[in-house]
Length: 276
Image (cartoon, rainbow, N blue to C red; front, side):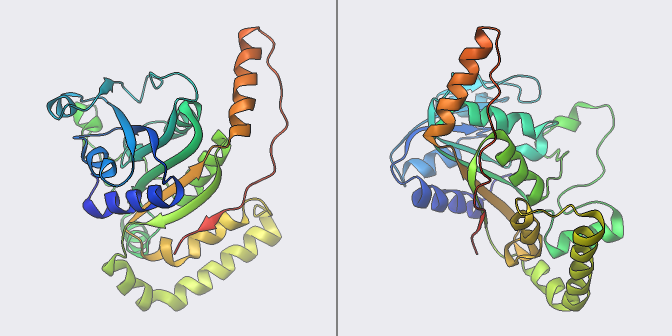
């Protein structure tokens, strides 16, 4: 569930990275609270999609019903300047498919995604003791409650969210948080020597033995030992789609329609920014 702090963080990022606003899509909009608040901050023309559209209809917000676990976004390519998706992807079976869809419907603009931070120290301690990350727990079996509003089914560490955005085609990924979680701050102070030693050992093994840390993914890996991820309650991740990416996407779609897919070279890995 989105909170006031999460909404404020999303709006702050939109004002900084997309101050001109434009056509806006809110994926999984709930009651439309973020749309109303964002509309008071920048000039946006907002629409929404959600499984439960009756809440948005009551608030006169244009909305299309969609089951994000089984359907594509019901919009044409390169339509929106701004795409937001707040506290949704942890409810989905395949969040990477949704991020690819977000890329498809975006034009030269910004995407902002939020999800519970399963890497803060409170969550790491909880996982060590129980095997469940913070805000995730045992789920009911074979019942509709599996997909209820409180049904967090997919914990997503920052590395995999950023990786999925880059893999979808987005660039210039930035990390932010909604607020500092006091419990995580307490555990960080208490366990910092242990966390530091564990982190250094992890890096040494990954670099020397397994060789999984590369020039391209090193900034994403380093973020796991950052202030934001150690103490933040919710991660707020933003990325952009450039006009060059739109042209490549259009070419690919056109070639596939002709039955002759065009293989395009991968772009140079973008810079990853960590916002404190």
